[in-house]
Amino acid sequence: MAGAEREITDPVEAAKHGIGSSKRLIAATLDDLSAHHSWLETYHRDERLRAERLRRRELRDRLERGVRHAMTRTKRAAQTTYVGGRRVARFSKRHALAFARWASPRLQTFVQHAAETTSTAWCWSRKHTPIFAHQAFSAAHDGFAWSVQASEDAGHVFRQRIATLADEARPSFGAGPLPCAAAVNSNG
Image 1 (spheres, rainbow, N blue to C red):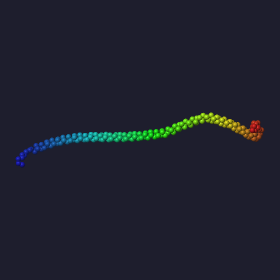
Image 2: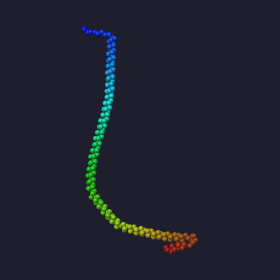
Image 3: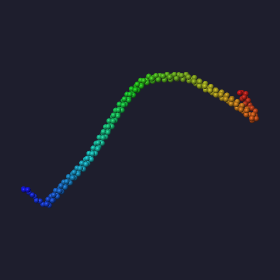
Image 4: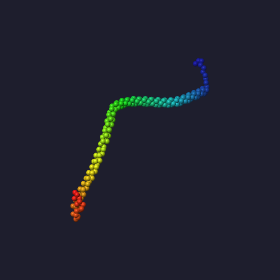
């Protein structure tokens, strides 16, 4: 160790110097720790905000995908409905025209026949209504006359039988024949 200079220091001074440098080291470490803690809080806050933004963006993207999917399905359904409607309309038109071509002459024949039949029926009823009315009146008149005659005949027979029964019952009461019973017996 030739040539090296050795410095002799006081141990108290050396201890004071060591304690001072330890204090500075501790203060620097505390500054570093509080700067690191502040950075860590800022980092955590930024990460929470970033995660929130990501969740909102994912939700918005998912909603946009749902809207696009719904729009696609709606467009597809509308297109299918439109195409189906056109096909049904063409089919209906074609068959309606064919039916009209088929039914038109038949309908004309039916209308003509109905008009002729109605006219014939009207003429027949105009011709025969007075005859039917006369026959109905004659039948009612004859029926009424018959019922009057039948009632007269029934009344005559009834009176004759009552008179006969009265004549038979009279002797049991001790009296002679009634004058009206003799007149009925002489008429009958």
